[in-house]
Image (cartoon, rainbow, N blue to C red):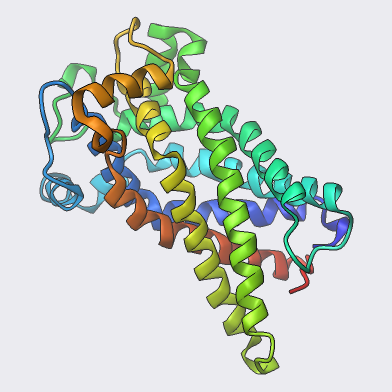
Length: 304
Protein backbone atom coordinates (compact mmCIF):
# COMPACT_ATOMS: atom_id res chain seq x y z
CA UNK A 1 0.00 0.00 0.00
CA UNK A 2 1.16 3.51 -0.65
CA UNK A 3 2.90 5.38 2.13
CA UNK A 4 0.63 8.37 1.67
CA UNK A 5 -2.58 6.40 2.32
CA UNK A 6 -2.92 7.88 5.84
CA UNK A 7 -6.53 7.91 7.04
CA UNK A 8 -7.60 5.74 4.08
CA UNK A 9 -6.17 2.66 5.80
CA UNK A 10 -8.58 3.29 8.67
CA UNK A 11 -11.58 3.90 6.39
CA UNK A 12 -10.94 0.60 4.60
CA UNK A 13 -10.68 -1.12 7.99
CA UNK A 14 -14.01 0.41 9.02
CA UNK A 15 -15.70 -1.19 6.01
CA UNK A 16 -14.13 -4.53 6.93
CA UNK A 17 -15.65 -4.29 10.42
CA UNK A 18 -19.15 -3.58 9.10
CA UNK A 19 -18.91 -6.56 6.74
CA UNK A 20 -17.76 -8.77 9.64
CA UNK A 21 -20.75 -7.96 11.86
CA UNK A 22 -23.35 -8.37 9.10
CA UNK A 23 -21.94 -11.75 8.14
CA UNK A 24 -20.84 -13.16 11.47
CA UNK A 25 -23.01 -11.83 14.32
CA UNK A 26 -25.63 -14.64 14.27
CA UNK A 27 -22.86 -17.25 14.63
CA UNK A 28 -21.34 -15.17 17.43
CA UNK A 29 -24.64 -15.10 19.34
CA UNK A 30 -24.81 -18.90 19.24
CA UNK A 31 -21.15 -19.14 20.34
CA UNK A 32 -21.66 -16.81 23.32
CA UNK A 33 -24.78 -18.66 24.52
CA UNK A 34 -22.97 -21.99 24.34
CA UNK A 35 -19.98 -20.58 26.23
CA UNK A 36 -22.18 -19.10 28.94
CA UNK A 37 -24.63 -21.93 29.59
CA UNK A 38 -22.78 -25.09 28.55
CA UNK A 39 -19.88 -24.43 30.94
CA UNK A 40 -22.00 -23.88 34.06
CA UNK A 41 -21.99 -26.42 36.87
CA UNK A 42 -25.77 -26.91 36.53
CA UNK A 43 -25.17 -28.86 33.32
CA UNK A 44 -25.43 -28.54 29.54
CA UNK A 45 -28.25 -26.35 28.27
CA UNK A 46 -27.83 -26.82 24.52
CA UNK A 47 -26.96 -30.07 22.71
CA UNK A 48 -24.90 -28.26 20.08
CA UNK A 49 -24.73 -25.08 18.00
CA UNK A 50 -27.59 -26.13 15.71
CA UNK A 51 -29.85 -26.83 18.71
CA UNK A 52 -28.98 -23.42 20.18
CA UNK A 53 -29.66 -21.59 16.88
CA UNK A 54 -32.96 -23.45 16.44
CA UNK A 55 -34.08 -22.51 19.96
CA UNK A 56 -33.26 -18.85 19.34
CA UNK A 57 -35.18 -18.83 16.02
CA UNK A 58 -38.17 -20.60 17.58
CA UNK A 59 -38.43 -18.25 20.55
CA UNK A 60 -37.22 -14.91 19.14
CA UNK A 61 -36.97 -15.19 15.37
CA UNK A 62 -34.08 -13.86 13.30
CA UNK A 63 -33.78 -10.74 15.48
CA UNK A 64 -32.71 -13.01 18.33
CA UNK A 65 -29.60 -13.97 16.37
CA UNK A 66 -28.72 -10.27 16.06
CA UNK A 67 -29.23 -9.54 19.77
CA UNK A 68 -26.46 -7.22 20.94
CA UNK A 69 -25.59 -6.25 17.35
CA UNK A 70 -25.84 -2.50 18.04
CA UNK A 71 -22.86 -2.42 20.40
CA UNK A 72 -21.12 -4.95 18.16
CA UNK A 73 -21.48 -2.67 15.11
CA UNK A 74 -20.05 0.29 17.02
CA UNK A 75 -17.27 -1.70 18.65
CA UNK A 76 -16.34 -3.73 15.59
CA UNK A 77 -16.35 -0.69 13.30
CA UNK A 78 -13.85 1.19 15.47
CA UNK A 79 -11.92 -1.97 16.34
CA UNK A 80 -11.56 -3.05 12.74
CA UNK A 81 -10.66 0.45 11.59
CA UNK A 82 -7.85 0.65 14.14
CA UNK A 83 -6.76 -2.96 13.69
CA UNK A 84 -6.33 -2.78 9.92
CA UNK A 85 -5.06 0.82 10.00
CA UNK A 86 -2.44 0.26 12.71
CA UNK A 87 -1.38 -3.02 11.14
CA UNK A 88 -0.93 -1.48 7.67
CA UNK A 89 0.99 1.54 8.86
CA UNK A 90 3.17 -0.25 11.44
CA UNK A 91 4.04 -2.98 8.93
CA UNK A 92 4.96 -0.34 6.36
CA UNK A 93 7.19 1.39 8.93
CA UNK A 94 8.96 -1.86 9.89
CA UNK A 95 9.55 -3.24 6.40
CA UNK A 96 9.92 -0.03 4.41
CA UNK A 97 7.70 1.55 1.80
CA UNK A 98 7.41 -1.45 -0.52
CA UNK A 99 4.38 -3.69 0.08
CA UNK A 100 4.53 -6.75 -2.09
CA UNK A 101 6.86 -9.69 -2.50
CA UNK A 102 7.37 -12.40 0.10
CA UNK A 103 5.76 -11.76 3.54
CA UNK A 104 8.18 -10.60 6.22
CA UNK A 105 7.37 -12.14 9.64
CA UNK A 106 9.55 -9.61 11.50
CA UNK A 107 7.14 -6.89 10.29
CA UNK A 108 3.85 -8.82 10.20
CA UNK A 109 3.85 -10.40 13.70
CA UNK A 110 4.73 -7.32 15.83
CA UNK A 111 2.49 -5.05 13.71
CA UNK A 112 -0.49 -7.38 14.11
CA UNK A 113 0.14 -7.99 17.83
CA UNK A 114 0.53 -4.24 18.47
CA UNK A 115 -2.72 -3.48 16.64
CA UNK A 116 -4.49 -6.23 18.58
CA UNK A 117 -3.25 -4.90 21.92
CA UNK A 118 -4.46 -1.36 21.12
CA UNK A 119 -7.93 -2.41 19.95
CA UNK A 120 -8.50 -4.62 22.99
CA UNK A 121 -9.12 -1.48 25.07
CA UNK A 122 -11.99 -0.50 22.75
CA UNK A 123 -13.21 -4.02 22.14
CA UNK A 124 -13.49 -5.05 25.79
CA UNK A 125 -16.36 -2.71 26.82
CA UNK A 126 -18.28 -3.22 23.57
CA UNK A 127 -17.95 -7.00 23.84
CA UNK A 128 -19.02 -6.92 27.48
CA UNK A 129 -22.27 -5.21 26.45
CA UNK A 130 -22.69 -7.52 23.46
CA UNK A 131 -22.17 -10.68 25.53
CA UNK A 132 -24.50 -9.55 28.32
CA UNK A 133 -27.20 -8.78 25.76
CA UNK A 134 -26.64 -12.08 23.95
CA UNK A 135 -26.95 -14.34 27.00
CA UNK A 136 -30.42 -13.03 27.77
CA UNK A 137 -33.48 -13.91 25.75
CA UNK A 138 -36.74 -15.79 26.13
CA UNK A 139 -34.99 -19.16 26.32
CA UNK A 140 -32.40 -18.24 28.94
CA UNK A 141 -32.22 -18.45 32.72
CA UNK A 142 -31.65 -14.73 33.30
CA UNK A 143 -34.51 -13.37 35.42
CA UNK A 144 -36.69 -10.68 33.84
CA UNK A 145 -35.82 -8.23 36.61
CA UNK A 146 -32.13 -8.30 35.67
CA UNK A 147 -32.54 -8.16 31.89
CA UNK A 148 -31.50 -5.14 29.84
CA UNK A 149 -33.74 -3.42 27.30
CA UNK A 150 -30.72 -2.35 25.23
CA UNK A 151 -26.95 -1.75 25.29
CA UNK A 152 -27.33 1.75 26.81
CA UNK A 153 -29.25 0.42 29.82
CA UNK A 154 -26.74 -2.41 30.09
CA UNK A 155 -23.86 0.09 30.16
CA UNK A 156 -25.55 2.35 32.74
CA UNK A 157 -26.41 -0.54 35.08
CA UNK A 158 -22.92 -1.97 34.75
CA UNK A 159 -21.34 1.36 35.74
CA UNK A 160 -23.85 1.81 38.61
CA UNK A 161 -23.22 -1.66 40.03
CA UNK A 162 -19.53 -2.18 39.25
CA UNK A 163 -18.13 1.28 38.63
CA UNK A 164 -16.37 2.42 35.47
CA UNK A 165 -13.84 -0.41 35.80
CA UNK A 166 -16.74 -2.85 35.44
CA UNK A 167 -16.89 -1.96 31.74
CA UNK A 168 -13.39 -3.39 31.40
CA UNK A 169 -14.12 -6.70 33.09
CA UNK A 170 -12.33 -9.36 31.05
CA UNK A 171 -9.78 -6.85 29.77
CA UNK A 172 -6.72 -9.05 30.30
CA UNK A 173 -8.37 -11.98 28.46
CA UNK A 174 -9.33 -9.63 25.61
CA UNK A 175 -5.78 -8.24 25.41
CA UNK A 176 -4.26 -11.73 25.18
CA UNK A 177 -6.85 -12.93 22.67
CA UNK A 178 -6.48 -9.96 20.34
CA UNK A 179 -2.68 -9.61 20.39
CA UNK A 180 -2.03 -13.34 19.90
CA UNK A 181 -4.99 -13.86 17.57
CA UNK A 182 -4.17 -10.93 15.31
CA UNK A 183 -0.57 -12.14 14.93
CA UNK A 184 -1.89 -15.56 13.83
CA UNK A 185 -4.60 -14.05 11.59
CA UNK A 186 -2.43 -11.62 9.63
CA UNK A 187 0.44 -14.11 9.30
CA UNK A 188 -1.92 -16.73 7.86
CA UNK A 189 -3.61 -14.15 5.61
CA UNK A 190 -0.37 -12.72 4.23
CA UNK A 191 1.21 -16.11 3.48
CA UNK A 192 -1.99 -17.60 2.00
CA UNK A 193 -2.45 -14.49 -0.16
CA UNK A 194 1.18 -14.53 -1.33
CA UNK A 195 1.25 -18.21 -2.33
CA UNK A 196 -2.17 -18.10 -4.02
CA UNK A 197 -1.18 -15.09 -6.13
CA UNK A 198 2.08 -16.88 -6.92
CA UNK A 199 0.14 -19.84 -8.33
CA UNK A 200 -2.20 -17.57 -10.31
CA UNK A 201 0.49 -15.28 -11.74
CA UNK A 202 -0.12 -16.29 -15.35
CA UNK A 203 -3.86 -15.54 -15.29
CA UNK A 204 -5.32 -13.12 -17.84
CA UNK A 205 -5.74 -9.45 -16.85
CA UNK A 206 -9.49 -9.70 -17.59
CA UNK A 207 -9.96 -12.15 -14.73
CA UNK A 208 -7.74 -10.28 -12.25
CA UNK A 209 -10.69 -8.68 -10.41
CA UNK A 210 -12.37 -12.06 -9.92
CA UNK A 211 -9.06 -13.61 -8.83
CA UNK A 212 -8.51 -10.85 -6.26
CA UNK A 213 -11.94 -11.49 -4.74
CA UNK A 214 -11.36 -15.26 -4.73
CA UNK A 215 -7.94 -14.90 -3.10
CA UNK A 216 -9.42 -12.48 -0.56
CA UNK A 217 -12.17 -14.96 0.35
CA UNK A 218 -9.75 -17.87 0.78
CA UNK A 219 -6.95 -16.01 2.57
CA UNK A 220 -9.35 -14.14 4.85
CA UNK A 221 -11.34 -17.29 5.64
CA UNK A 222 -8.22 -19.31 6.43
CA UNK A 223 -6.90 -16.47 8.59
CA UNK A 224 -10.15 -16.42 10.56
CA UNK A 225 -10.06 -20.17 11.18
CA UNK A 226 -6.42 -19.93 12.31
CA UNK A 227 -7.28 -17.02 14.64
CA UNK A 228 -10.08 -18.81 16.47
CA UNK A 229 -8.38 -22.20 16.55
CA UNK A 230 -5.48 -20.54 18.38
CA UNK A 231 -7.34 -18.37 20.91
CA UNK A 232 -10.82 -19.87 21.49
CA UNK A 233 -10.04 -20.97 25.10
CA UNK A 234 -9.19 -17.35 25.97
CA UNK A 235 -12.49 -16.29 24.40
CA UNK A 236 -14.40 -18.85 26.48
CA UNK A 237 -12.77 -17.48 29.64
CA UNK A 238 -13.54 -13.89 28.56
CA UNK A 239 -17.22 -14.67 28.00
CA UNK A 240 -17.58 -16.25 31.44
CA UNK A 241 -15.70 -13.40 33.17
CA UNK A 242 -17.88 -10.77 31.44
CA UNK A 243 -21.27 -12.45 31.93
CA UNK A 244 -20.90 -13.75 35.51
CA UNK A 245 -22.43 -11.16 37.86
CA UNK A 246 -20.62 -12.25 41.06
CA UNK A 247 -18.03 -9.64 42.01
CA UNK A 248 -15.69 -12.21 43.61
CA UNK A 249 -15.63 -14.42 40.51
CA UNK A 250 -12.07 -15.00 39.19
CA UNK A 251 -11.03 -12.55 36.47
CA UNK A 252 -7.77 -14.22 35.54
CA UNK A 253 -8.49 -16.14 32.31
CA UNK A 254 -6.09 -18.95 33.26
CA UNK A 255 -7.84 -19.46 36.61
CA UNK A 256 -11.20 -19.61 34.81
CA UNK A 257 -9.86 -22.10 32.25
CA UNK A 258 -8.48 -24.26 35.07
CA UNK A 259 -11.98 -24.41 36.62
CA UNK A 260 -13.55 -25.26 33.24
CA UNK A 261 -10.92 -27.95 32.59
CA UNK A 262 -11.63 -29.60 35.94
CA UNK A 263 -15.34 -29.58 35.23
CA UNK A 264 -15.50 -30.37 31.51
CA UNK A 265 -11.99 -31.23 30.33
CA UNK A 266 -10.38 -29.87 27.17
CA UNK A 267 -13.72 -29.99 25.39
CA UNK A 268 -15.08 -27.40 27.81
CA UNK A 269 -12.21 -25.03 27.00
CA UNK A 270 -13.27 -25.19 23.35
CA UNK A 271 -16.99 -24.68 23.96
CA UNK A 272 -18.60 -23.05 20.95
CA UNK A 273 -15.95 -24.32 18.52
CA UNK A 274 -18.54 -25.40 15.92
CA UNK A 275 -20.37 -22.07 15.41
CA UNK A 276 -17.09 -20.19 15.88
CA UNK A 277 -15.39 -21.97 12.99
CA UNK A 278 -18.58 -21.79 10.89
CA UNK A 279 -18.55 -18.03 11.47
CA UNK A 280 -14.79 -17.60 11.12
CA UNK A 281 -14.53 -18.36 7.41
CA UNK A 282 -17.39 -16.24 5.97
CA UNK A 283 -17.00 -13.35 8.44
CA UNK A 284 -13.26 -12.95 7.93
CA UNK A 285 -13.53 -13.61 4.19
CA UNK A 286 -16.08 -10.77 4.02
CA UNK A 287 -13.78 -8.55 6.11
CA UNK A 288 -10.75 -9.08 3.87
CA UNK A 289 -12.72 -8.65 0.62
CA UNK A 290 -14.33 -5.45 2.00
CA UNK A 291 -10.91 -4.20 3.18
CA UNK A 292 -9.12 -4.88 -0.10
CA UNK A 293 -11.93 -3.55 -2.33
CA UNK A 294 -12.30 -0.41 -0.18
CA UNK A 295 -8.55 0.12 -0.33
CA UNK A 296 -8.66 -0.07 -4.14
CA UNK A 297 -11.59 2.35 -4.36
CA UNK A 298 -9.72 4.76 -2.07
CA UNK A 299 -6.66 4.57 -4.30
CA UNK A 300 -4.45 2.55 -1.95
CA UNK A 301 -2.25 0.48 -4.23
CA UNK A 302 -1.02 -2.91 -3.16
CA UNK A 303 1.35 -4.90 -5.33
CA UNK A 304 0.74 -8.61 -5.80
